[in-house]
Image (cartoon, rainbow over all chains, first blue to last red; front, side, top):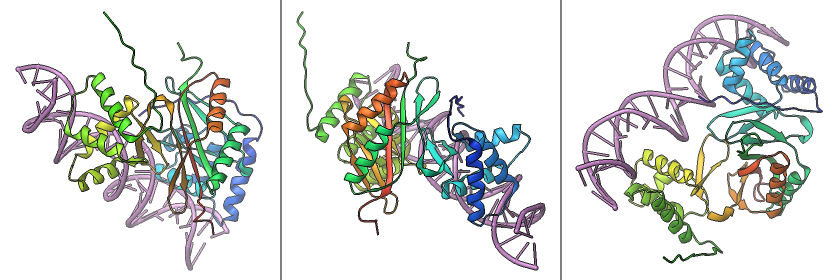
Length: 157
Length: 157
DNA sequence: ATACGTGCAAAGTATTTGCAAACGG
DNA sequence: CCGTTTGCAAATACTTTGCACGTAT
């Protein structure tokens, strides 16, 4: 199993906003409240980048709020269905999850092929190019994944 | 001693080009030839879009050139290491593979969330935006994955 | 009271690995 | 010949599911 340390800085959109939004949407969707989901939401809200289910499991265990791995997957699926979290795939067979903010604001990921560091970015020009492409092919764009792989400044020898 | 530089330009990139290129690179890498790899390369060269390992397995079986699934995975890994194929991930836990042309020419994918149809596209503006982003973050861009999900023209009701 | 939520263990799925036999150079 | 390639079966890794029990409303 591989672990990747993720370091990043996020500005704007406080995590509390997301937590409230998420709990509100769940209530609106008719969901009851429960310990596992509560712990997952609180933990996700405190992250600044995506986590795998296993990382979430370990993190909660460390915090003393142990939750079954199956429940974590179930909660994440429910949150993804409600578009409250976004699935991120770096391509090693592990799916990661991160808080998804309402209003379409989002970022994408730059992964260092050497050290595994993950940076995020957000580029209006890129988004415009993607919309244009989707439109010109007759697609109503719904969602998109962009992952850049390369050597970060530290790893370029 | 005389050296001859052979420079060739690939335009239009027919699938045969890729097949020859791939076999050449493998030879150059010191690989021997074998039935499984041969069949996989021939089959990949005949495709116009990505295939999963299982689809390759089934396709070869139909053609009467049955190959073990493990060999397919091994061949694909070897080809990916030599950058002769590219891994494509649409995000359902299945990795797909497609011929990768030399010279960085490539396309990306549009997947219909409803019918599963896959279109490809190629957009210089998008590529420029990606290079710009990577550069401004100090990354030497190596590879990138872009997958757009949406409703295709047929599925928009 | 009655669904919904949760945990555990078992099952499932995609992929990788160990090993012995086949095969290419 | 010797080392690569291959096929099969077993192992692995992540994720999903079945089921009994707990819990919110």
